[in-house]
Length: 374
Image (tube, rainbow, N blue to C red):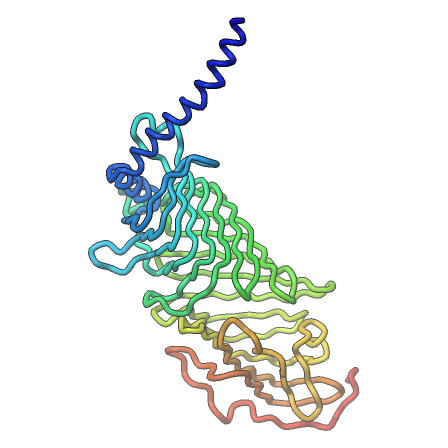
């Protein structure tokens, strides 16, 4: 009999207790004080001013938190915001709520835009050796869905992010991430940001559409806005790779030294990625010797003929405007040899601050066809 009473009390009391707790949390979070505390908690996590505008609804299941519209990050003192979310979901830890404190566990933004150049880094405690440290956020999960990443401080050159997930991010800790970009593919791997927030290292794989898996390794110095990136592609036993240093200025990313290994064939030069809309990739490259037949086996789009060196399908349907100038001292293909050849694809290949390429450079001159083994 007592067991039945206990079971009845639990059956009735547990839902009532649940509803009372939900009502209390709901009333507090939906009040202006709860919203303001949630904004302050987000500011502590993200290190920038946060404003929750528009609708505001409490979530109790499957996780405790709030959802709404119109989240704005950054933009202090009348400046432009770092991020604007059309919709948001924020989950919080339960136990701190009993002390009327909010501890953010995860943030999800759907729609809107993020402009990385507008990130307002907040100074933390002073370090005698490293100068002013950066107070980076520590967060269990951060998710972007259907958001435009806009390159450059003016907010041009949008890159559509279908999904970006960081899990258990903290400075000095190897953090997993997954990035799905429209027309570019899926990138996933690990990123480590040093405790000062000035440097980062990236280890990732890029599942490039119609190409294959490309390994990525990057080192970034945020203080000098420079770094170095290495890529490697293995396709049917053949490999291709690139190594390039870069620095950022107002126009975009500048690559003062680029080196390509195309299945054992070397190409080098300079380039830039301009933060225009759409982005502009400009490359000025040179090679002593290129074998078009070997290149075609590695890159199906590359073709060559005895009369003319061409690359007919390259540059089509790319997520950026391509301008390529490739000067080749000796170009071989299909039994023919071309000397001092200049291949051009797309528009101008000149970058800001670089001397324009001479129109006389690389005048093409067909030679008598020679056997492949000569």
